[in-house]
Amino acid sequence: MSAAQVTCWYCNRPARLITGKGLYPHRPDLYAKRFWRCLPCSAWVGCHPGSTEPLGRLANSELRAWKQTVHRVLDPLWQKGVMSREEAYAWLAEKLGLTAEECHVGMFDPATCKRAIKALNHREVRK
Image (tube, rainbow, N blue to C red; front, side, top):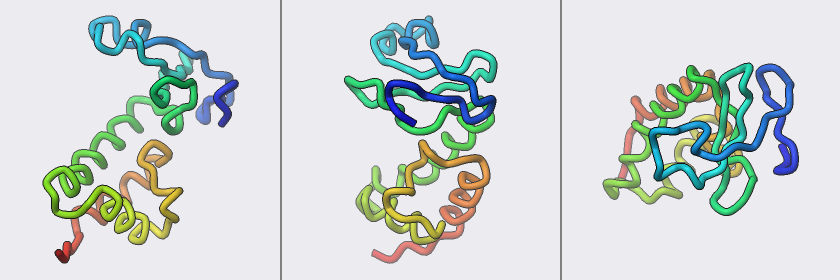
C-alpha cells in the first residue's frame, strides 16, 4: 500500500485521497486531516499526520466498529498505567502470534479484531 496509490482491499479499486471536510462535514476539527476513501465500499482510512501514508487498511463500517472495540479494551491498559503502550502491544502481539510490527490495530481484519478482543478480555496482567 503506497502513499501514491491505495487500493481498496474490498473491491480492488483505487481509493481517492480526500480531506476530512468531505468525510466529516460536521467536524471542522477534522477538515485538514487527510483520508483515503473508497466510495463504492464506503471504506476509508486516515493518514499519518502531515503525509498521505495510510494509518492502516481501508475499513468499512463493520471493520471500523471492530477496531473501535479493540481500542476500547486495549487503550485503557496503557492509558491507566497498567502497562506501557509498548508493553500492551507486545503482550497482544504475543497472544495473537504476530510480530510487534504486525500488531497494529489499523491493519487488523475483523477476524484478528475478534481474536484480540477475546485475548484482552481474558488477560492476566502481572505488574
